[in-house]
Image (cartoon, rainbow, N blue to C red; front, side, top):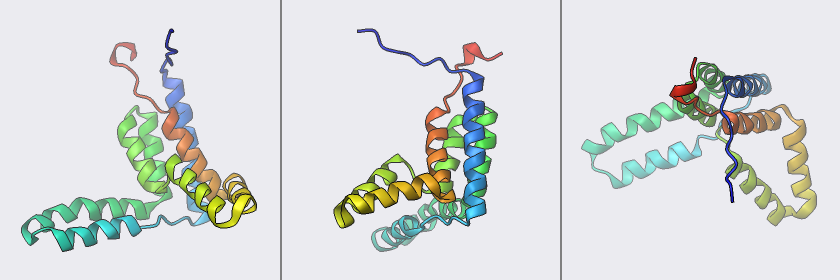
Amino acid sequence: MKRKTTTVTPTRNKVAAVLALVSGILLIVSGYNVNLGIYRAIESGLQQYTPQEIREFAIIPVNILGLVAQLGGIAVLAGALLFSKNHISSGKLLVMIGTGQGIIMVVVGLVIELLQGGFLSANSYVMWLATSAIGLGIIFSIVARSMAKPIPSNSRG
């Protein structure tokens, strides 16, 4: 069976940049804040389970990631700029950290709503994603990250 390949063009990354730009604007306008619980949990784990000499250096990247996450929509806008400049990996990282959400978290949220409140609650979650500025910002960021692909060096012009 022949595998379908996707041609990566600069236009694809420009569309991803526009989607990330819209996502960042929506997140800023809505006042979205990333949940920093995961960063605090990692920090707590480092404090409990690592020697002080290691902890002093290991905690720096965690705090930097937490700081970038607090920028939220601004980090997503920076990711959009990186998409447009074909710095895809860095752009994806900023968009992911800026939203604090990905497709896995959306699916987990949907499953939690299904288990706790049934189909009506899950339907409300889907409606929130599809109609609120925050929900649309998260969806656009996920689509932008999945669309953006590095342009192979032999096809750059």
